[in-house]
Image 1 (cartoon, helix red, strand yellow):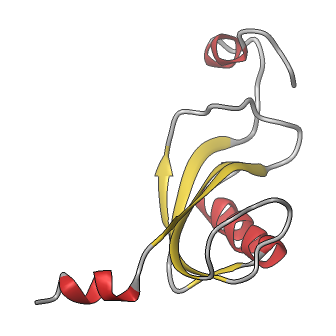
Image 2: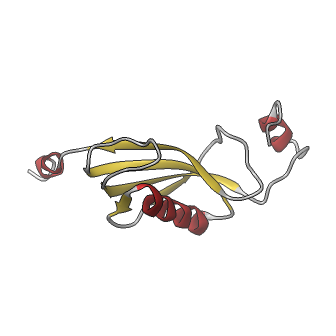
Image 3: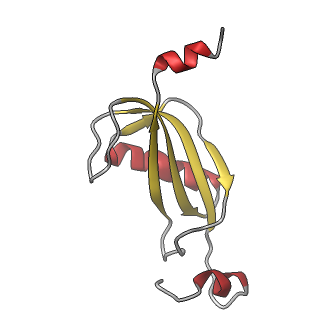
Length: 112
């Protein structure tokens, strides 16, 4: 889109999109990552910002990206409606993918 002041134009209807903005967070198993992403292999929380039609499409995008770049969600993901940092495009997409690795023992400590 590349528009100057795209947030204001979107807010006031000067530009429109069929998409909503979400942040998806999942507890994942990270393997060998590709495409310049980096995180040690093992458990990590992965977050991605998405432009999608609904929460199901945002979830599908997250799982698809995982297959493409090398992580697998363990279970359900959490989805939040959030403020966009990047403008919408003509197709749904994800951006700003972040990895926060943790040790399995960190999880066990909280149960005692």
